[in-house]
Image 1 (cartoon, rainbow, N blue to C red):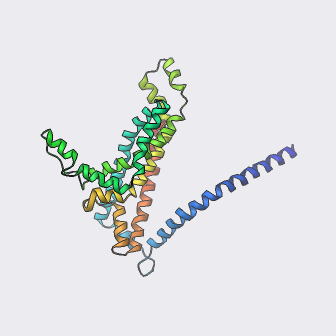
Image 2: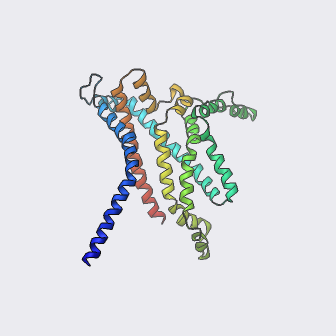
Image 3: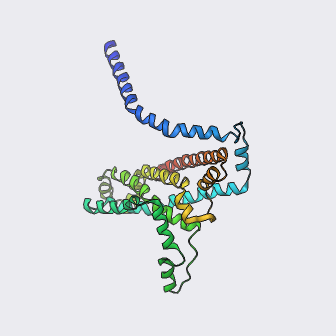
Length: 287
């Protein structure tokens, strides 16, 4: 028995070493490209331009109602973009799941095709569509309606961000839905469950991991996005990345830009943690 125990212990150590070696390259890249810059930004945010330690950068931001409104507006647009992508992407992912492989490949290509185009080109394309003389305005005028001012508003930013981020929501949802055992729904219907009950008690709870992954990706990318909000929102729509850019390139106040960026990282992480816990509780309710 002692020999068996020693052999089992050696096997466990070998598995641990093998796993560590396999994870080492990814851990090194993660540390070099994420943790190191994030740590440098955090340290720099507690300094003045002269290099002395201070908390003035954070008190300056948190004590100004204008900057707090900018933070709130960034989180609001990120949340609405996530909800919009989820509302559009979930039915699309469900439809893809039930299609033939050939049609599914074409629809997936249609979904991913915008990612092959530069984000700047896509944003300027939306300025044409949403502009005062664009096709949308002309269509509304043709039916006797007054075209609203969409360009350089929060609505324009939301439309553009949903278009940009939709694929990042659908792809995790497709992976989550594909992992659901296809025999569960016929078995549930054979036991008398309706289509709505099957969706509510089986499909929706089992697709929560995909919803969580897609929401995390969309929310975090939207909160840190600069190009699309800058083009579609213009100077009227103020978001956190815009102020990080201006502080770093216009006023050259790198410590304050670092503080703004670090506040965005901390707040975004907190929102995502709260969302994951809320979604986990929702899964328990559905099941």
